[in-house]
Length: 263
Image (cartoon, rainbow, N blue to C red; front, side, top):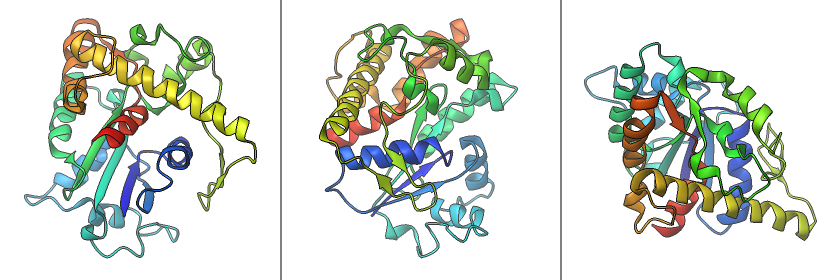
């Protein structure tokens, strides 16, 4: 069984459930859990003692009052073979940019193995909404060069609404029941194929952009390690954050698909 831990309870589950249908329908059983807070908070909770608790213990404590908590029937970390976490860069949550980046570096070392007690972290730059940032109908061949000021913070959503060709997630998602998390897939092969085609575009754009960020080459990476979460973050710092106070817009969901399919 695989656990997916998301920062939010709205967009991320909808995105994932669609991806699961399109790419992983014959894979292992999955559970999803929304933390409803940022990665800085989760990291603080997990490392406040000399002996960090495993992520399942932390999540069960956090969601103890939630009767629909998907971890209620889970006894321990060993119930899951893999754990993946998807959170936003969210540097605007910390008034000290240097401290935020120091913590992100630490977290990528801490959450660096899906089979460990802590899981593997994937980061959205600047946030999960980046998945629909394209200034023209897909494929957007200029996507490799799109950046956003760090100072924009949550106002990135306004930038997205003003500049993106897509104003919602309908072009890459099917409807989902927010309570049961059941996906309502249309009985229309054409519609399904359009959504799958758009995800294939996003996979191509984001993986190549990650490789461009890390190697200056607009192509698929030679190895998964070439676009590891650590290398992506290091190059974000080196090429955008430190010299320009910007972030290269990049989404982790397509990168996860790529890594999972080709690992």
